[in-house]
Structures are given as structure tokens and as C-alpha cells.
Amino acid sequence: MNPSLSVFTHWNDESNQSEIFSDPVISNCEKILRFLAPEFLHSLELSIYLVNDSLMAEINEERRGKPATTDVLSFPLYSEHPPIPVQILGEVVISMETCKKQAMEIGHGLVDEFYRLLVHGILHNFGYDHETNEEDALLMRKMEDECLDLVFAT
Image (cartoon, rainbow, N blue to C red; front, side, top):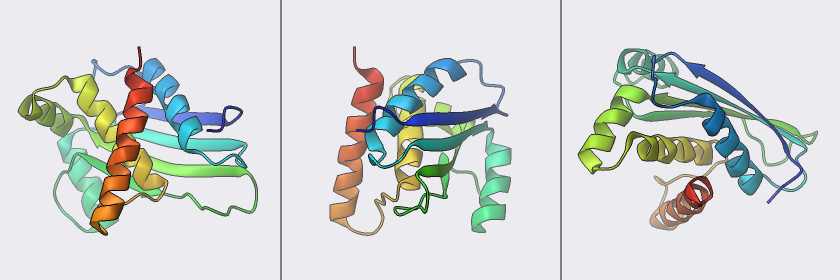
């Protein structure tokens, strides 16, 4: 936990999504990033982009060579040993169309699914990976649950 961390969150909604609002997301990002960031960091920056499936497919093809939409993409810039205590964490891109579809399929609300994707993307930017092995997948899932508890704590 890094309570003194300065957090800068850039918000860009290209999806014309009216159900997800920037102020609570930015506030919740601060909680999540302060929880995850190491103590030595003084400042951390994150960019969040909400897009539609068409733009997500373009980004996915351009950045990963995969010409299809997906729910969330992460583009990490994080270093575990930065030369200065200021860090750009990276970008999280969320397709709101896919987010809505998945929320309906899973049977929970759009806000729940949005934060699940956001936390997943943030964790990838910190270097967590669920695709390498079962142990890493379990650790990432545990961290997702802990971060979501911060967001939805009453």
C-alpha cells in the first residue's frame, strides 16, 4: 500500500458510453493503484480508453497483429526498477460493446463487468499474467478479487 502516491489518470471515452462516468472511475483507480504500487514510487500515471468494438479491432490489429475485437487490452510501460520514483504504468483499453455483451452473458451489471476488465488490465500493466502457468493465474485472480473489494467496499 502506498497512501502518499500521486496518481494521474487520463480518461478518454470514444465509445459514447453514458453509463460509466469518469469521476468514480478515477477515484477507484487511485485506490487500486495505491494498493498495488510499491512504496518507493511517488507518482504513477495510467491512461484509460473506452472504445467500441470497431476501434478495438483496429487497435488490436495495429498493436498485436490480431484483427478482431476483444474485451480489454493492456499496454504496459511499467518498470519494476525505474531510475526515478515517477512511473507511467501504461494504457488500458476497454471495448464497451464487448463489456456490455459479457455483462449480459455472465448475468451481472455493466459497472461490475467494467471494473472487472479495468482491474484485469491494470494488473497486466503491473506485470501480472494469467497465461503463463496455473500459479500465476491463481495469483492474478487473487489480486483481481482484492482490487475489486476495494472498489465495491461499502
